[in-house]
Image (tube, rainbow, N blue to C red):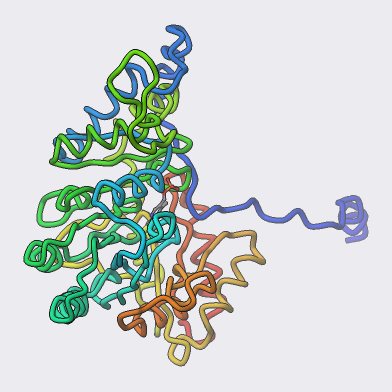
Length: 394
Ligand SMILES: *Cc1c(COP(=O)(O)O)cnc(C)c1O
């Protein structure tokens, strides 16, 4: 006993904190290194180049699009999509309120006005009934929006058909923000490929990454060709530098595109890994009172880019914030569901169509660590925190 106490005394007193568990981390495959080395070996490190062309072609094949344009970010892709839809100063653009701010910022870059639309509970995405009603009433009032930015949240497609039908009826451009939904499906097809254009993101926290990048897709060859020109400082087709419109520097580098090619090859595996995380959480936590997961709608496959849950405080016996703070204490990164755009100080004064559902999801929603590199021990640590906080748990 005395000997044991002496040994214990030699152990440093300060507890080392448990290793950090992140919400969503990059996860490289086997091929990226070779592609990047090839870019170096051939001195193709400039923007554009053979990897960019191949990445665009391979991306088209993956999502089933006809034309694609690789760009420096998803935000840049959305900015160009809005320009190509003719959005300009004073125009209105309807957009999902429950989203990341990058869905809205490019609307404001153009001097246009975002109008926020609430979510429905079945998919957490834009409520089609509410949207159609808003479009009808605006049509009657002679003030149709120029475009709609339809967001596919957390790896799940919105209910595209009714929204697209209403857009077609009134000649409003449908732009899909599929930044979080690469690998998902809607009635057998990829969200992002239904509208006039669709955008994707390869930011470091997304399901695949180029370290930073984005993609614009469309069935309209002329639209993508014009986007390509705008993304390269809008150079006219002349040997001397001539410009007839304002352009941007938005193209992706050949090095990043090399990473993207490797990542695209493992997309299906990444989706499977994230869905397995979700299954783990569902089996471990699905029986807890007052806890429910983001539903998977009947129209397609959810990638579970992030596993999100919502808590009924009364039944669960603790609030979302108590759970989140318990995670922070254990060095685990968990995040509230996006704060709706109509509640953001920067968009105060913007119009909102409904908003109560998104507010409720924000109040009660939590995103759990969901990266494809998580191991069973890490998932178990997350589950333990949730169960420990819950006083009503078995
Ligand atoms: C990440 C994200 C974007 C922006 O993509 P970046 O490549 O980071 O610019 C846009 N919309 C949504 C919904 C996103 O999650």
